[in-house]
Length: 101
Image (cartoon, rainbow, N blue to C red):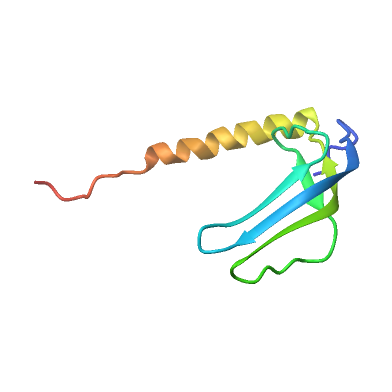
């Protein structure tokens, strides 16, 4: 269900730096948006460009353009509510071994 008529989303492009590392010490990919933009609950980032393959033992730093879509008030509220509900699922997990000593 689209809520864009109820609460429109702001969308804009911003340059970014992508760091991808595939080594024994670390396997990660980070995106840093220029201008120190803070991300909030429900916001989305789409990085444009061709897929990147980093061979084992390598680290790559790239410059790309990303589209940031800011969540509207409804999306932000739903995201925070669903995150809280998913967190409470952990409370139902038993960490006991099941055997009585």
